[in-house]
Amino acid sequence: MSCKGNGYDNAVAESFFSILKNELVHHQTHRTLYDESREVFAFIEGLYNRQRLYQSLGYLMPLEFERRASDS
Image (cartoon, rainbow, N blue to C red):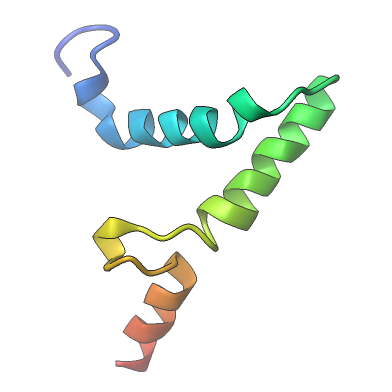
């Protein structure tokens, strides 16, 4: 680790939070912390982990990538 606040030390986490903010947080108006936590969970489990296409996986969804890997 280089110094406090250096985003390059944890590029994967910084990239994830950027995507979360740009695709969810900036487009939603939440009333309570409970509503926000439900939306974040739904985003991560429903879209980010299951439906979103990833360049590093050959533009496949993670579940499809895992299915293909287990079939091989």
